[in-house]
Image (tube, rainbow, N blue to C red; front, side, top):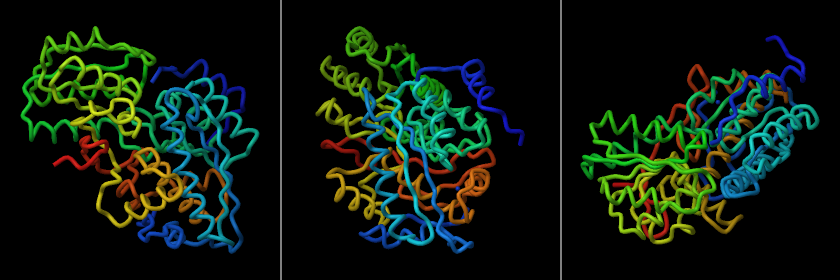
Length: 398
């Protein structure tokens, strides 16, 4: 591959990128109540070279601002995984993580990736948190030929950025239809209305998927309305929805605005089933929306309520360390580090190109967020779980 210099990379990002708002081996995640005891087995083959691999990983997350709950959960998942892996692989692998906070801003994500690539000399990057940030900063990593691994990017086209871009987060095109069809099979919707954030990549992508799926299901779309990230008053949009009285209200938003929409909808007396996108997969939803969240339906690759040995071992370790249950964002970040560690051990050295090639071979990785493989375009192949809000938590939708 032809390597471009830094100035070309920077120009490519600012001039050529549309800045919109917005893994080999069948290895497994920990099964015991002490995940570190099994962490060596979860990383695949041992380092063939015999020496310890010192690998510095960059992490680009939202750690401040209105969407910080996503990044905080991701950092927790990464820290837990790194502690387990370093303990289990002494003498073989030592991971170090360099965190960079974007505050949810695309420009900050670009600066963070540039710093990690050029100053920190990391072997790979995990993040950034939002899809819009990945569309902005992903090209920087790709031009520098350094693997960048999204653990919460669900918008279509992420992997089209380039062959050094990976993600283990299921796209909305899989998760949303799964939730909508499961809910429809039980509730038999005839009409729908849509509400979404029009200045956020993720929310717009989810809205388009919701609308397309509703049309394919034969639902009559009574109306749709939009708002902006940062809005706090949704009375006008929801008053219209109340007049339309749809069977299901489809909401595509990040957790803060989405939770406020749900809360206001119930305050206005809207009785429609509310179905949300991936942005609702955060405990903050229950803190913000309160009892109004009851009955909210979403799809996720991870549920802390799933009765699976691997999942429950992770939940127990996470709760012991952080005092709360993990969400999807923590789980996918945790799995992401395990996948990177597995690939580094199989590579036998901390080399960007070799790491990229090993990541591309991922097949049947059994993580806490389910079984995962990559297709030929490094997109995740996996299944979504449909959950419903009940008594302040998400439980399997049945």
